[in-house]
Amino acid sequence: MPIIKSKNISKTYYAEEIETPVLHGLDFEIEEGEFVAIMGPSGSGKSTLLHILGFLDDQTGGTYHFNGKKISDYTGAEIAHIRNKEMGFVFQAFNLLPRTTTYDNVKLPLVYSEYPESEWDEMIMKAIEAVGLEHRTYFETSQLSGGEKQRVAIARALVTNPTIIFADEPTGNLDSKSGKKIIEILQKLNEKDKHTIILITHESETAHCAERIIHIKDGKIDSDKKVRHQKDANHGYKK
Picture 1 (cartoon, one colour):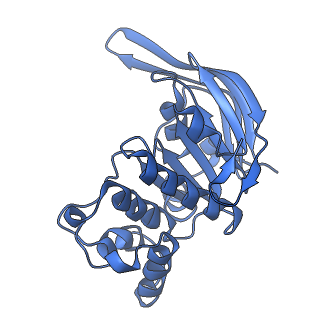
Picture 2: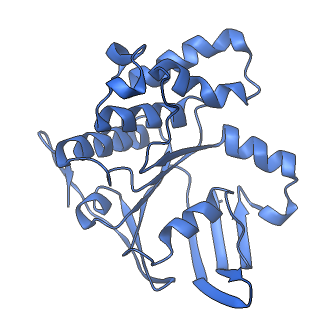
């Protein structure tokens, strides 16, 4: 059973009397453990789709099943629980708390979780170690580089051990070296820790680090293809 099933999903925004259709009848499924890149140019609707898949927005047409159940059949409390426990989010702008340490940024999802506080420290340190930032644990965000800030954002997304990590243009504000490191971390989380990764990007090189690419153009699926990779000992994965 797929963890995500989109059937004829559409999205239209309404402002006064103006209608702006963004997504048009998207059909696809994502299995647990996949690494999928959703690729397309700016304005193609890929971030809108991510917001729908991550329960951050509602579709205006079609049906969305998560874990075999229609979203409309979940209660508000169930949706909040799934978003906190089953989903992690990484955004281009990092969205870290200013004047706050790495440790406290990573802790944030736990404050709204059902995990007992006695377990928090171990969970936080495990997430920080997963992105290789133990030496920055008690540094404030203002003391971190852009690449380090994004690694903090990934650790924060990881801390509740979610099933799915949504990454929206995670390399968009980074130089190529830092961006490569972020992609390597996401690949490791998928391969070693079996997290489902859904990556939003407009960059072809970044997209080809996934094992499957769904290409969106003008709000429609233009192609949906598996990507074949060849292991490279020095550079991770290449097409």
